Every structure is written in structure tokens, then in C-alpha cells.
Length: 113
Length: 114
Image 1 (cartoon, rainbow over the protein chains, first blue to last red):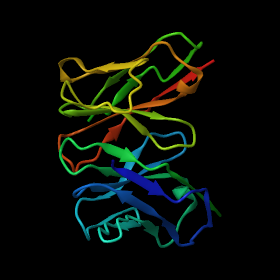
Image 2 (cartoon, rainbow over the protein chains, first blue to last red):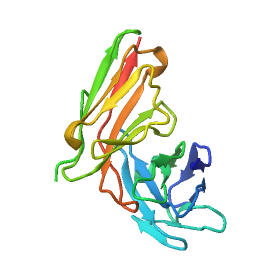
Image 3 (cartoon, each protein chain N blue to C red):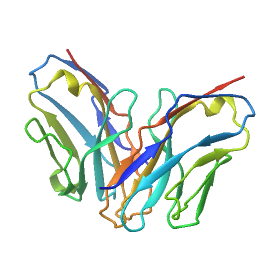
């Protein structure tokens, strides 16, 4: 069945460092891909998405490109801030309107000043 | 617009007791999800509804968990009897019936089974 695998955390960076969080997926057909973020004490919220191969999703300085050839959707940011400290989840929605929405295990990011 | 509402926010019960969680999705959202999130893990899909029909419940422990979505709007998730390993945050989410749209999440219910 469909699945999502993320790099294990926690990831600890200094402010202004470059961030990459790896995400790979297994799915039949053409899923939509998402990154969700959970800030401390808050609920899950969408960070960005891409719905077809080679699409790039972007928001708040974060980017991720849907790579079908490598079945990947890695999250990147050029310069992280302390306020980016959160748990990041990669997710996929199966390739139909009734497909399942499934999540990776999450990666905790800690940014130190 | 109003978000996804869940109640209660917190619940502590003894093992073998029963518990129910309630979710009110965003108006107009046909798809409703229930997830179990154990501390340090990603959300695990328990059941997915399309209107009031079940799309997927393959990971729902049906010997103790049940869920319903009456009239295609509100939903309840019940656990009977609870086990210690059911301690987790139970998340409800909803979305439009389209593959490429985001799901909106409620704040969740934190269940502690003692």
C-alpha cells in the first residue's frame, strides 16, 4: 500500500542555516504530496503542496519539488529562523478523490539562536 | 470560516472503560478523517468517510473502536473497552472531495488511559 518515509530527527540547526528534510514515498498512480507543520501547542496545518510531477510548492520561504523519478518530496529552506522550530510531516493523498491521506512519522526541527 | 471542532480536549479514563470523541467538520467538506497520533509518531489513519459512507477503515481496530458519521456531517469515534496502548491524541480532519485539496485539522483530543 501507499507509504511515506521521512528522515529521522531531531534536526538541530543554528539560525540562518540551510534546511533539508528528506521525504520519499511509495504509491500507485499519481498522488498529491503535502508538507504539514505542527508548531508547539498548535494543531497540524498545511505548509505547502504539489499535485503533479515537477510541481514546486512554496510557502514562508520553504520549498519542495515533486520528483516522480526519485519518488521524493524533500523540504528545503535557505535560512531558518528560531520561529521555524516545529514538527514537520510529509503526507500523500492517493491518486483519486477517495484516496487515503497518509502521513510520515514526522521530523522535529530545533533552531537555535 | 469556522474550523474543525473537536471535543473534549482532554480525557482521562481507566482501562476497560469506554470513551467517545466528537468532531464537527468544516461546513461543506465531504471527506472526514480520524487519526490516532501516538507521542513521537505521525498521525495514523483510523477511518476515512466520504459523506456518510466509509472509504477506508483498514487500520481501525474494529474489536474495540467504532465510528459513525450521521447525515454526512458530525462524527463520533468510540473506544470500548479502552487499553493502555490507546493513550494518544485523536485528530479529526476534513476536506473537500478533491485529491489535491488540503485537509484541515482540529485541535485533537488527548486521551490518557490509566
